[in-house]
Length: 333
Image (cartoon, rainbow, N blue to C red; front, top):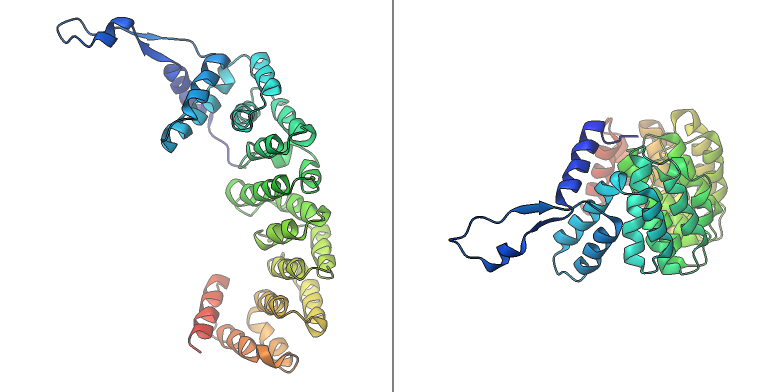
């Protein structure tokens, strides 16, 4: 996982200390140009002072200013008294304020200042009674190392009673895999697959699997995706089929067999299209004979299969180029 360097963290921390709060003396308010320039007085950061700033800032029309306040609290986190920060987090009930405080606690773990701070955030995400606060706490862990530090938290969150919390958890897993791990970290992808498999909400499962890079998943995760091909929900079957198209090379043969067998009995057109795409992705030019054998199964998808076979026959070596060419062929019909 890419983390900020010690130099960057120190600079940001010093910047935060410089900014909390820099206030002019009362004489400066008179604005008399003939008088000496006002002396700028620095004030030490405090949890209460920062929270007061943020509460006032939430009423601002400037989104940039609101982002600044969030960043200010996050970058000040390592210099703030841990006990005060945790106490403020535990007693706060406003979802927006809870999210800001949770971001600060997560930052303490991310910067190596307090390994247990993120655990406090995860605990509240799981145990808080107010679903809006639970959702806010989940958002605070987005694009962080929470996957590595919170055990089975996400498998539990995707079964939360609140649809908002479930979707926020799914978004976290998608964005963590994409922006923190760049889709290349097997354990992070496995965590997302495990959460999708544990979920009883088909929309959550479909969202996760439809937006996940599976190039580094384990054999167990591949088996879970194959079992989800038998879901009662078409959107889950479609997403599972899409996800199987990107599995590691050592599991491609097994995935192709599952997809080919499923195509024969599948009735949903959208699922069948996803199956065709993944068969093409797993085989490239070698998939052409398999696709041609499927032409007679569903007459409505003959044009789809023909577009795939033409695109695969062009000798392109990048999947993104093949996909773009197939889309062009379909649009040209």
